[in-house]
Image (cartoon, rainbow, N blue to C red; front, side, top):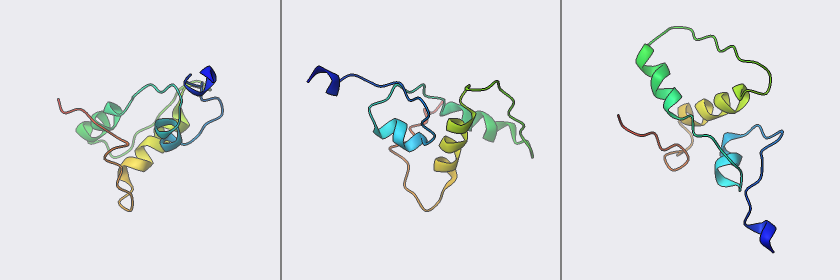
Length: 80
C-alpha cells in the first residue's frame, strides 16, 4: 500500500489541472503569468528545448484565462 502515497513523475501528461489534482510532482510556475501580464507585450514567443514544459505552461495559462472555469484553487498566484 506504500505506492498509493508516493508521488508520480508526470511523463506524457499535458494537462495542468491533472497535474495539480493528481498525485504528481509539479514545479509551480504560476508567477510566470504575472510576468507576462506585467510586461504588457502584444506578442510573446516562447522558445525552449524539447521536454522543457511548454505544453504544461500553455495549459496553465489556458486554465487561468478561461472565464468558464473557477480555477482559483488550482492557481494560487502569490501577491508580490
